[in-house]
Length: 400
Image (cartoon, rainbow, N blue to C red; front, side):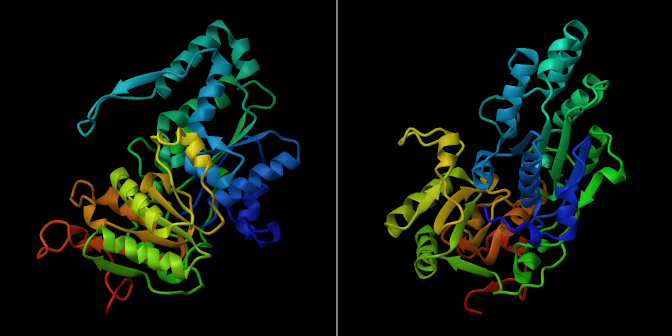
């Protein structure tokens, strides 16, 4: 992760880094405004002051990207076992699109368990349930009942404690790409926050102006807002039509060959597409570093998800192939979004799809290329996703 010097932080970023460590504060900011940078600085600053702070990330890849952090769910399971002596409760759910039932964390059930233990063995919760200071990034991707559980411990179980556990929460509801998530209002209400507890980041430090405008095209209008347009200019993002996946791979290989000092992100929605692209790029690029991650782990090399994420190398030249869900919070010199014609476009999911494209486009620092393979389906019929993409001059079609 590229970290600026403290002197390079903006006034609004420094204000957050050195905010009081008691209670709960919420940091709201769109992509590129430095939320994860602030979270990292905050953790380091508290560590220097000998105040225990735990930096929690949404997924394994972002944990690896930031370094010296862990995922919220890993921390949650360990903290809950320490506080209560039990495993965190789960419930079975089944949605129409699922092939089989899923087991998800039962935050509401955990809250009821905590209330019962408070009646029967309060000393255990007070002795083992204090988490110090937690910094929770990408907090919009956790259910509102997860926030309610944390608030229960702060404001009820530790209500009479002279120094209750504290939280810094960083969120942007425009970046919600999971089904179980929270809005800014839901987070604010769960933690009973007032306006003085909320900080806003607005300036875009990551993208060029041209990339920021393309990302803004997909903005769905939620209260976190769009970042201010950056002053830095660059190339107009491209729309490239390829005849098939192999031609798409050749385009990426050509760019990687002529830009061998760049960090390149190849981001797709579906895991089968990720796997195909990774294998083809790995074969074609030979000795150049090509890396990938899947939450399923790498059975061939006997790596679990955590070990697979730990093997990723950031801030050095590489081609990194990831699914959208693993890409949140990351940034690359150049981003390719291939096989966009595979995205399912329809009235029932357009807002979710626009959110995904908003988040993925904003991963790029200097170059953004969107790619559609015309070999899929009817060649005489344009892919429906084309109608969602920005038109010139925001997006330049190759050859125009």
